[in-house]
Length: 125
Image: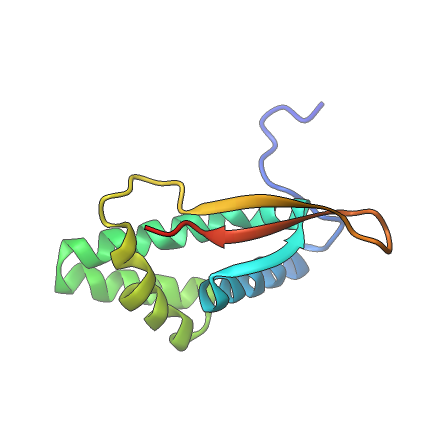
């Protein structure tokens, strides 16, 4: 039974999962749209949305809190360029939106192995 077991293992070790989640999130923030499998998209979607919420709340709270939020985001993402884009470009778009910053569009099965592919993109507003 999987009662109270959160998250997706994706048939990977813990380090591999965290690296995959960070990389997919960085690519999503950089390109604002990525094409990946449904399982990977669902596994990283919550992490990406929590990073946007962190940036949105940090920007709204003031200078001291924004510095703290930027440092938390940098620790979780590991890339200063991505953090800068997140705080300067992406977070201000969603100041009035309470959540649901991403959208998943189904693309159909992948030709090689039949994995269900999706387009994960940031909602425009």
